[in-house]
Image 1: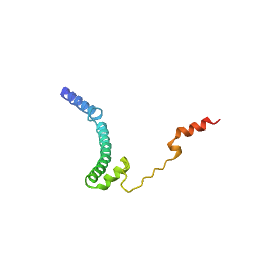
Image 2: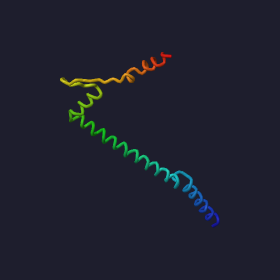
Image 3: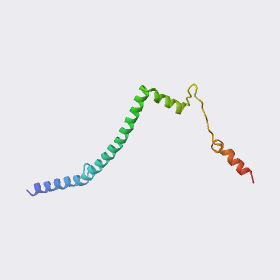
Image 4: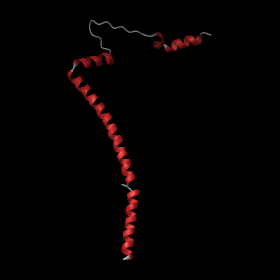
Amino acid sequence: MKYVIGMLLLVLVLLQIRLWRGEGSLSDIERLEGEIASQAEANKGLEARNDGLLGEVSDLKTGLDSVEEHARSELGLIKQGETYYLIVDKEAAHPQAATATATAVP
């Protein structure tokens, strides 16, 4: 009878150790739940980004206005009859020349 009680106590101690320290312990479960929550938050942001991209793709497929907008901004589209004006800032256009003249003068 003493051996049975001893074995049962040993099993109980081993189960308690596993519950508090081993894989699947309470602290391990809490850590995993935190990781799941942070991943769910990241997924929400990615889903919102995907929804925006899907809207842009469908707009590009159906509407010509967005195609024209992209062509104007990225490719420099100019329609017939339009006048294109390019305003260049002297310092922004030639920053090395401005510093060279400033350093050349003693």
